[in-house]
Length: 247
Image (cartoon, rainbow, N blue to C red; front, side):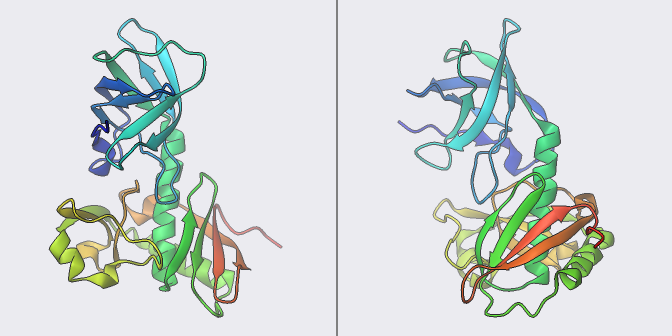
């Protein structure tokens, strides 16, 4: 039986703590709640880590967060060897905020890269310090210094980043919103979540279920570490925090 977890992070990525109720325990000891602030691994972004505080004051360390039988079921995987809460118990959730914030900044940086390089995306992976986006490009024609400069122009412009929901019908009428070459966002739920950049989404708008900072300025200084050839028409751009290294 699959449960539906209310994903609070979809509307507010800045929630660091909240209270929830345990609704199920999986055969492998995973914890399912009625609501959560923990992002589940998806779309190239890793799931959150953190802890639960139990009613008796005990803590449960959470090592990873994943989806279950459906994307709506979110399972919190505790570190082995801990006493687990029981169904019906109330717990207080706390995510590892410094890690989450790095992932939010980096995920937003990946969106900015898709603006600078407007080509079909063939893959992506978000990490705390070194992320990648793969594009379907026969020949980049780009130097990493040029891409870095254009990324930083978007960062310095401090454009707002916000969430907008559209209907399945609106999404079907705007196929150009999808930047991924091989993966389409799930439809059929009645609405699609868009991550928008710029006033009235003038910089970018694309379907995404991840967590992002509230403005491009919050991304901070980033640079392209390298551009790698990963096939005849596939180029991998690696994004890193901080200024480019001095050669």
